[in-house]
Image 1 (cartoon, rainbow, N blue to C red):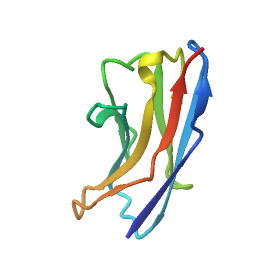
Image 2 (cartoon, one colour):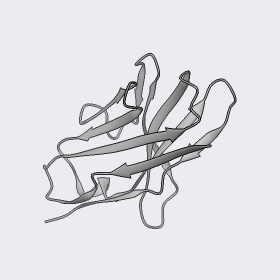
Image 3 (cartoon, one colour):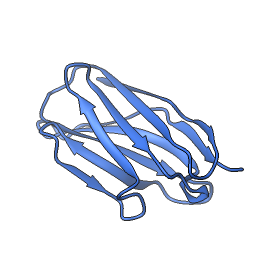
Image 4 (cartoon, one colour):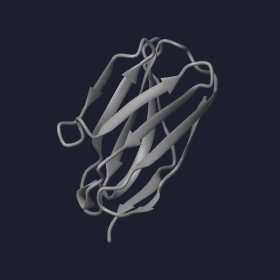
Length: 117
């Protein structure tokens, strides 16, 4: 199985920045998609960004231009750099991995991001 551990969340003022990290371990096929999702109170979990093993990225419209997803395949880590944070970005952010070989999906435990003055 794959284990995902997020870190880097916290409290930040509007306009500030944070970098989230997600370290993967376990049995991992390198052909995969890793991504970040978030869930605000009372809301459904939503896509934030994804990145393939080859580096192709997608972003939700709400974060495009502000957030950057990247990955270090050697370290088996995916990052989410969040700039120009808004209160609307407040949520629990979850890391996930989807194997394009097996179809298996894995989720991290989540890390809280709070954007507030």
